[in-house]
Length: 356
Image (tube, rainbow, N blue to C red; front, side):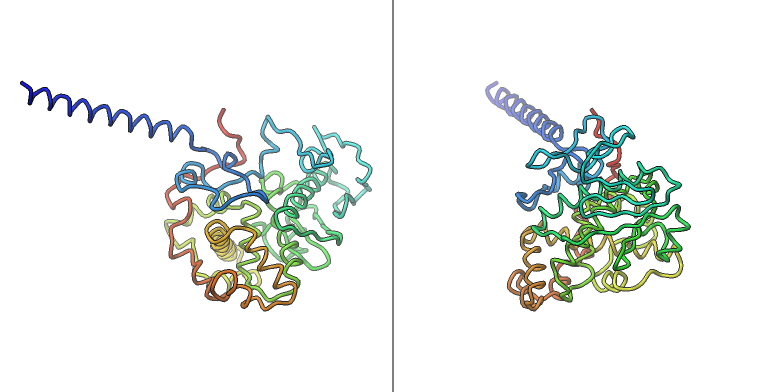
């Protein structure tokens, strides 16, 4: 009788433990973010790594570049109480008065951003793009502890035909820096695709990174990957490349990534699209590993700044990471580790707000 009671007690204890385990797992799952905007944003005070594997599996890559389209968004305000970024110049298609905003028939001037645009297109499209560039400049100067005083000159063509004529590239490349001016896809197109803010952050990041590095010879994957990391391009790479997973590798080794990023666009648009996006995603993954798991953003910033100040990049890299740039690239090879969100995680759509 006693033996039977002990066995019954053991069964009940195991059942209770199983229930507690399931309850705990459910509670943990309930606390996991389920949307890219619910992950911790990147700030100057961020600690790394920012996320657990479980958080990334649940939410995908972080993306906060669409929050201004969600119903509960309120405009950002800087330390002086001045609004910046989305809805700081335009609200419900009405321009807000700002002393430093000058709008002519085919040009907008705001702070250190000048944009030329076709007079046939309504100006609100371009003011929204200026807001995106303003947001990018504000956030990225804080993250990189660096600013560029020179004027950023932007041209937005009338349509994608005009964009190709001016850039000699197709629409999977969102802009082209021609040195004295950056030609972007038509602002109305970028806004419709949900990529306006990503383009603004990416081109602003490339500009700040290049200035911070001061002409030092650094690999293409570093500038491109860091720009995509700062622009939070991860969910879009994940979605854009999903269709290719079954037929080809979408993650490349560093040598292939570097070769594609350092070369001009391929003459065949479809070939260029696959090459450009797989190389871009691979560079993003290298930058992700570098920042998230190997010392944070400050370490990368120091590499750029000291190289820009005249120190030999390989020597700085050896001091900071224990290897030269080529060895560092080999250590960051994204083909040697799983993707942070995993290959089987469903595609997330950050353009849609989180479920209530």
